[in-house]
Image 1 (tube, rainbow, N blue to C red):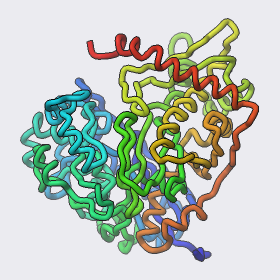
Image 2: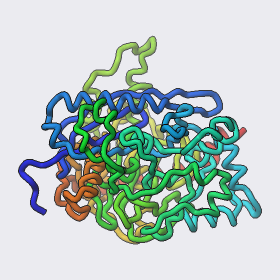
Image 3: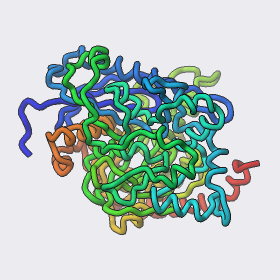
Image 4: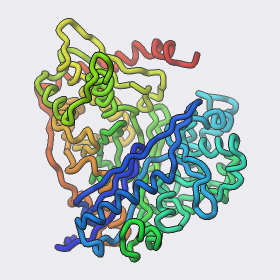
Length: 529
């Protein structure tokens, strides 16, 4: 591939739960600049967690227009817009594309009773009717979670609790697809963004479609579901209103884009079959492209449609990773209470790195289990809780800081082992992305704990935006997905340190023993009363 000396650019939108980030990214993956705008979450009784879709759109316009006004590049060279967003944030819109109520986010669990009613049956395993869940897994790769946080649960909640809104709904859209609607006026969804409706037959990766039997079983009206398109397809030109609001030319193309897991994989550079990447943000995952459809029910790992046409992605997620360090900073080190009212310094995470680097591997036998919000994989157990184990009179804050970082790495190794079983091969090297990947100390800990080479992707926090840009670039013909590994740049390569191997193998074994020996206690303390 011959790169143009004067490349074109993509306005890449990374829409997360806490805010919207807009970035200028070249069609070859170079991130030039970005802007960020916070979007609030409204928590409600009985498990409600909503956002105003207009807040998303306003944040997109604010961040994008600020970027355009900076003149980072000539706006005539911006050829596309592509969005990546969180999954399972469901928007009910009318025929004009106007939201009929707030979006139900991926944290909203009010649909749980309706999902449980939907999936129950005889014989039953873990709350699922066996014939029903087999049908779902065979066709979709998974099935509605009993937590009630999937799109299907959100729609059922609206249908049962807000029937007037359900009746007025023209289509139910994911957040990415709502933003695409605002950009173009077109109603559509990508194959990957509709996964958590659990209504698409993904057995033939080249012929993904709504399954009429599953739609009928769900009780959701088929005509309220958006048309399906590949992530690389061109949805259309940007609308005149959107172009004027952002400051873009009217010939800019809007490409479908992808959900966060799928865009992050592309942005990590690990786009070939079985090439692994680790994401360390608030949550974490270990994923790769796979050439087969498969589901590991016991460990919550499944092959689901990727953003790369004709490919599946091994999907899984652990609840807490970088969120554990945020907890350490905001709830323990700087709780802003009567004992410690001051705010953390701006360079707090750099300081944590410096302190952790002074502590030998194993943190003097201290083990942190990062299950602050339960866990999803390789065990699906919401009753698990975090803890510091083996504290002694010799334990100090430096040990605790490193133990937090090591505990997240142990948890990742736990999941990583089952992912390697899933793909029947060793995953080595592994690209690492996300905010946690900025820490060289943490990257080395991951290399040592996993006993794998860890490649720190350049600009790791921009992986989703870079992935969205690569998807647009491939859709417009500037690159192919096969070009992406050569376009991926690394800030550092971390190889396992042999002298730490025995320590971390022993500590990981005890980490697993902590789970095995205490899981019944967690269920007694935190399970249903």
